[in-house]
Image 1: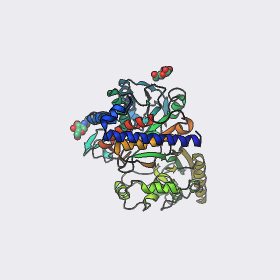
Image 2: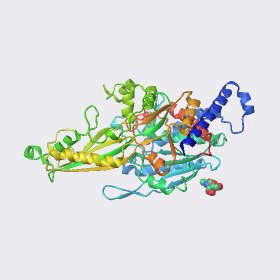
Image 3: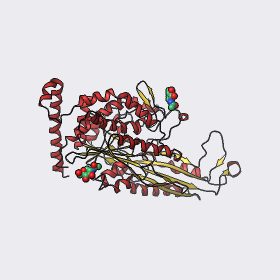
Image 4: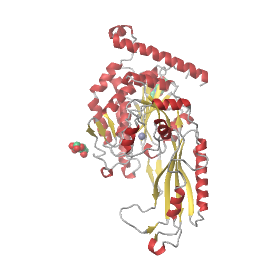
Length: 518
Ligand SMILES: *[C@@H]1O[C@H](CO)[C@@H](O)[C@H](O)[C@H]1NC(C)=O
Ligand SMILES: *[C@@H]1O[C@H](CO)[C@@H](O)[C@H](O)[C@H]1NC(C)=O
Ligand SMILES: [Zn+2]
């Protein structure tokens, strides 16, 4: 799309949302008159919203059934549960009359060389009207691991309502948002209202472990399932505060293994300590050269690649609903890296950072063990932002670690590998998809949403943007304190139910986007 086309598109969208705003006002003041002048396709938001409210308990029950399935994609022992989760998702969509496929995406090779079937990907379609836009909702129904012993207050697979919060693994990430989309479509159907756009679903079961096989599946269906898709909607993220939010960027991630190997076997520190250069000492030494205590990344070239913060961004961050104390309390620290909101948000979203995750081969059990590990492998990652390039970062990190290691003059061997290289994603917030999001938030919550980014990584967004050339919006409904991937994950009833209404309103707003210039 040219700049000019784009500008006229934005104008059109604005014009349209003004007209809609006027209609909504009429609806409030003079409902009977509006009824007379409205066409058959007038948006009956109140009826739909009321339908959602009156089916709230049912929606919580479905979520309970979904959370009860331990669809942990990282644990191969849970693979049968994951397969069942995909079947149940497909069945739910089938019962609604969708055109549903369970797409085989092949096998996963385990470290031992064994092969195990990947969970099938669910695709579904509702509506096939070429005069309408077609949106594709992406979501996932696999979850992170969770055990009661990890410090959960309730059984993570038994959805528990405490003061209007629904606790359970996967409740917010991403089962409730997937269900909210399904219920949004169901509500239109139940009230015999035509869907304002064609709705497709793409639901996978490997998101938490890197979406194995999904890219290939999407590419293979580029000219079939995806050929008529205009827009991709992803609801796999959260709000930042109490206000609804539209997410327009995510960080990427480069994940590294740094392995230091020394003696041919583990050694007794009393017998051999003092006579060998220990791999662990080497490893800790080089890890400590990655980042300073104040968060400055020391790997040459990384900071230079980062796009500078613009004045517009600075202003945008200033206005965002974000409570620093709340954030601090939520994570339970006495001090944050930055003491003002703009710096903190910028470092959360649009600057890179190094995180050290663990050391394989290191002694980590309770008690004392006087071992010198023979081989240790550090796991660390660097979050990626525009304009960093994972291929370049890979070389920068490897060259740098080898150079600092060389200075140690150690006889041990260092091996650096990059195992994940996911690019960041950034959307144009002037795109009609975002204008539609603002209008939908106004309808449901009566306020403008915050435009936010996400510090985490959703690699599939890049595939859709670069390879499939589709426009994407991230439309979250989860709360800022939902504890994704953590103990006591939850979603509030409020976010679940109002979020369903948001999706209903959003479909209507997308239908207003002018079709011809797309
Ligand atoms: C959608 O409509 C087209 C054209 O009428 C048809 O070829 C196609 O099979 C339909 N697809 C589905 C899923 O109904
Ligand atoms: C879930 O928790 C509730 C409340 O503690 C309990 O009554 C119920 O039996 C539990 N269900 C399962 C399947 O464990
Ligand atoms: Zn997720």
